[in-house]
View (cartoon, rainbow, N blue to C red):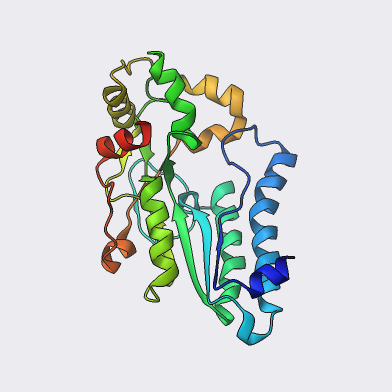
Length: 248
């Protein structure tokens, strides 16, 4: 079924992967985090390679994440920055390596995606009920960086990269203006007309998520340098406008 679907496809978009920050990082869950990305991408690229030359899709858009860079409160990361050596950094390196294997026969675009703002899922979807009840606030000390992108901009980026042959290689799929968690919480509170004063203690989050808490307790300031050089037009470059669109 996969082989037939690929033979009929002009392009492939692979964003498969178990959610990163929703469970404790037990050995079993870490294995699932890896296999759902690395093994899936490996199998997909192998299935594409096995097709006759004229039947292969011409483009592979593959997911990755800004976790590639590790975490920092002071550094700025672009597409040429080195990979982190932590769990997520190593995972993203291996994930991207599998996608690069398709470069032998098609155009490959890898999107290192930040926090995607959508009101019905992801990090924002989990924060909204708490904020709407008036109990929202920054997570941890509030100083960690949040590099984000609206879901509509991410979808626009994927559709643009599918049809524009100038897109190739790795791109940071983040809006131009990263912010810290405190600023994000304040903007979300203003958007909803609710207070955003009660911080979520880091130790509580670590108790619930274990090592997975580092995804929201630590962060990185990531810049979309290659997208800007490519002339990609962000529709939601302003955080307040992006939050308003996501929560309306």
